[in-house]
Amino acid sequence: MIQIPNFLFLLCAAFVIMLVATWLMRKQSQFFFTKDPVRRKFSILEMEFPVKSFDLEYLIKGIHDLPDEADKTVTAVHRQLLVGSLLFIPALYGSIYILCMHVAVNVETPAIGRWWFVMLGWAQLVSLLLDYVENIYFWRMVGNKNIVIPKPDLSKPEIAAPSFKMIQILEIVKWGIVLIGFVCSISVMAYFWLIGNY
Image (cartoon, rainbow, N blue to C red; front, top):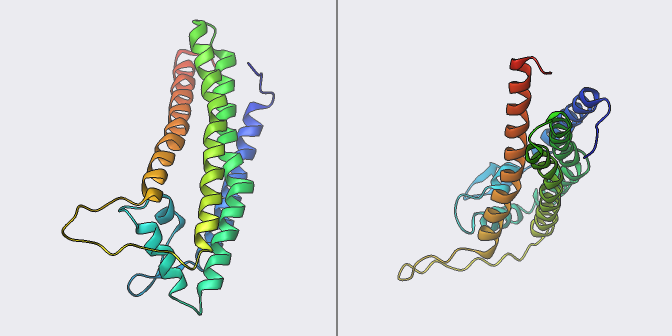
């Protein structure tokens, strides 16, 4: 178990870093355009949470179907992924790690509660690694001009793209760990505050 000195200062610093990173990523997103079937803006969330199979492939193909803007869009996506990887991701998971460890130090009994929060804190490393894997995958996909999308065959059931299944599993695991850590930590801190132990 790790005692976090200056808990509140570190939490506020992580929050400020997340705000700055969000502002920088928003500046890059003004250059995100795809052709679907007409020119339109898109967000990084459309890449992270595709609604249907092959949505990601159609989105990336649409980027390269706009030859005048494709390079600018690819560069902007790469910059947003870079800012996210260097600033936003470590600040987000770091702040939840700090919350979990702070609660673990303050939970006296039972011992299983203490170890639950230590485990949740260290589990943020899994989310961090999954986010980096996801960003590397998107980095490579966006630069690929030769995306192959199979033509739909109405006589057969639609086959889900491997990327679609992979992204769904990755997002469920990543965000599941984050949300459990955040909700559990905030709930216990609120409980301690209400009973006057904080």
